[in-house]
Image (cartoon, rainbow, N blue to C red; front, side, top):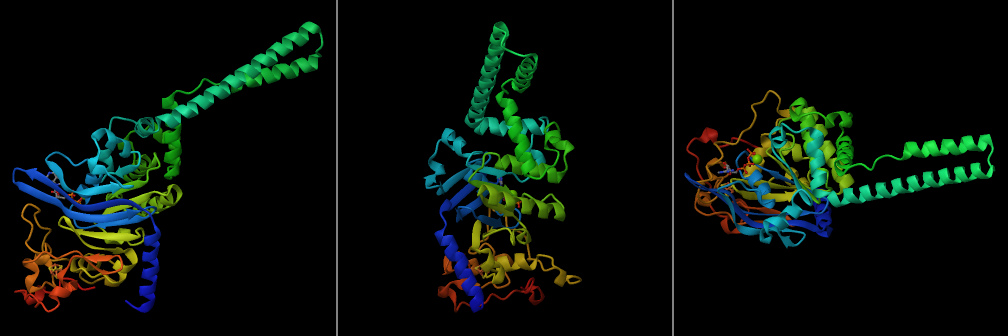
Length: 420
Ligand SMILES: Nc1ncnc2c1ncn2[C@@H]1O[C@H](COP(=O)(O)OP(=O)(O)OP(=O)(O)O)[C@@H](O)[C@H]1O
Ligand code: SF4
Ligand SMILES: [Mg+2]
């Protein structure tokens, strides 16, 4: 890294220092107790999210990204259990809350866009009903206040009309009114009659809010969409609806689990752009989960790279993209298709993601790592801070193992499966 890059990165990091910590996940372990054995889906994960930042959580399929997200909201499915760690949100350990208390946070302060928008929306409920239900559930007090205000306004109009009527009758009785004035009075009374509407029910106010938030996510015919059902919308529209539901309560933290995976690239770009705009507008911090490093390159402030239930590299997006260190991150970056690699064979990472019931010994990446050392299958790498706010779990960066000899792969041709 040259001097300018180092300086920029230091500026970026100092910005993070000044930010307030919103979420602090420490040594989180979530296991599934299945018949085949214990799936160590999340095995000692730690990271922070600051106010008004986007943290990208990246990794191949099955590495524990969704389980990490579900653990934050304590929505891990049966046989899954959070067995260790703490998840502090605004300094409150969510793991110590009762289910009742946790409900106050879910959907209100922390919301989640789930991985599959079609399965996450109720197929037999109209979009309007589903989105407005979020308001009825989490913003009832606010809606009641609006309703009270409307009721008061209505009463004022009724009183005003009544007074005008009384005044007219009196003037007519006293013979103090001309035909012209009478006409003006009647016009005013009729005008007020038109203005006096029934006070809307809470469900109608919630529908109005639903319409507003759907407009906010860039769907033009928001009113029309309210009556439609999920299967009548395109994938991009469904994803926008999910985002609108996620943002409807103006949460402090939005967890977006693969929000663009099922979409084509142009819609993908639109959705990411939309999330950025909404983040600016609502000042929501975002945990963006994806298996695609390319997607988060422009969106995230910092990135946590996850492999096989662990975070292996954690740094600002600038640092990580300029100079990726962990062999796994290097592999992920090398696998991003680009115009320069056109007509060349795309780099891949050898082998497969390991089975989390029997994860590899030592460093879990060792069966796939081109830079493997002799000790890598024997000792688990420690979590080290190699520079300010740059963390990595790899023996290559641990001074203790600087003289460790390189592992010799049997098949020399396979040694370099990727190169950055
Ligand atoms: N209900 C469950 N029962 C048993 N194992 C589970 C369950 N849910 C998840 N797992 C396992 O936990 C591991 C992590 O799963 P997770 O869904 O977090 O992966 P992911 O990183 O989100 O992958 P993807 O990119 O495919 O969404 C996987 O090995 C998965 O098989
Ligand atoms: S610890 Fe060893 S096997 Fe793991 S990533 Fe580093 S070099 Fe590769
Ligand atoms: Mg997932």
